[in-house]
Length: 453
Image 1: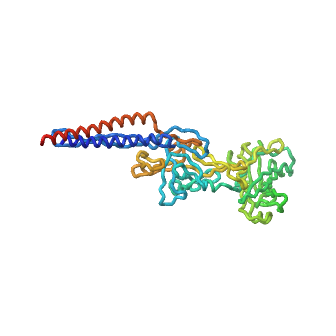
Image 2: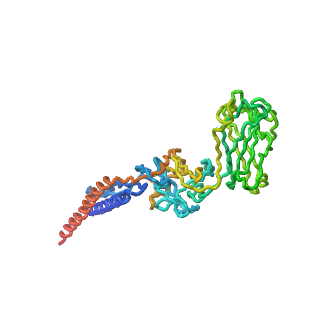
Image 3: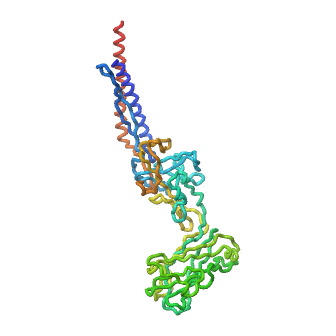
């Protein structure tokens, strides 16, 4: 009967407008929620097929839609651990501080992360930020498995509250005086380096002219910086004499370098280096020698000495000018406390320590999915991956179609409060009209009942 179908259509309209009202209410409630994505209600007609010629009402069905990657306005903050996604992608989070295989990884754009009582980063919803741990150069430690969620770990700053890093690379930029006589020492380069326990030493490089034209020898030694403590000199493993030789071109740039164990005269020199290649020498100070000299057991101090580039005046040179150093760098440090951290736009989290040194400690990936609209919303402004959304792909920021990480910023809610109030009025009127359908249908059925009386 058409009247009955009309009643059911009215009920369907009331239910659909109730859904719209709930969606609008949720949007308004989250107008200040970081990273919140507003939802909309779409209506679709329901058509009932009938063999009769009379009209049959089908009704209406409400469907809620949301765009999880809809860009919200970015607002700057004063917190170094606040981050936002500018563009496509999500942060990966987990409800557990130490996730296991049974704990589900979720996606979110709510980047209001703070340190918990254990110095792990979690957002205001209680989800822990996941990232790749890196070495001192920013390279992730598990590159071979970076596509798997299991390769991630909770960003834990407690691991770096106090660290010491042994020196592995030393970079020099200096000039040796071409005018001095043969077999004469020109200068001594001193730079502080560190072992695996954070003990400091003075790396002493003595430069001496040899009897061969445009050739110099360098003798590396380790000296104890604590003059009050006992301890002698540690020689580089190739011996104290002519640890390595450098041959210069007639224009004062490096031409050849000797990395051999037995460095005696010009015969030890290797072939000329390729123009532009790095001039580097490996120096090794053995554990046994260090223990004998300083009564401490540490890892071997293996250094790569960067002296510029072959045939270029980019590092070590031999010019008619006094001995002079213009650059002394090394990548180690003694025990020092963590002072602060900051993010880059590629998601690299760098720790800055009290002595002024810095070190990349984590890299935060951005996850993308083929169909973000099919993600399943979770409490806490997070999303779960579903079969319809497709598998998540972990990318570095600005790569693989993902956006960038905006540091010291949060993504505001996408709720437009003026639009929501307008939609609220429309939903209210539509709901009121739907109830009139039901009351009118009731009156019609009552008239039919009176016919019998």
